[in-house]
Length: 136
Image 1 (cartoon, rainbow, N blue to C red):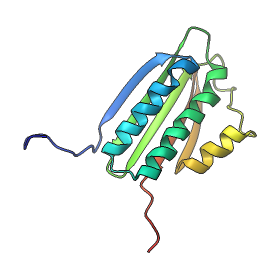
Image 2: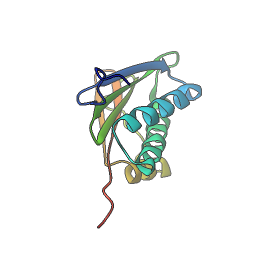
Image 3: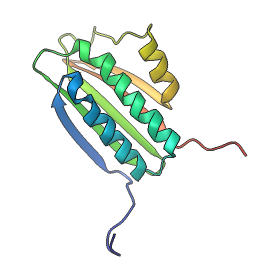
Image 4: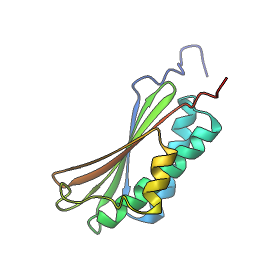
């Protein structure tokens, strides 16, 4: 890194769109891991985020219109990253990911915060991971 380059990620946003298929979820997991490292998250936090992104995608993909896309928006801050994954889903305002299964339980345990939004024809799950501070 040169003197003029900055490690400050404050406010950086990265958007990635892939086909709405489980075959491409690994791309989003790897991107989440790489960007979380730039946000100075711990190794455990990075692993948690990677799994959380995987679970969020698993919950969204059954709602996706065949042949559509899965979009991820990574919002970076120092010590924090928010990953908003979304799919094109008919009647997204009425659709909801399964919150009774193991995937939702795992997602909720791994993330600092999870939100679901269905508006128009987009269903999204936003996973936020903040750097965990070890107890003193």
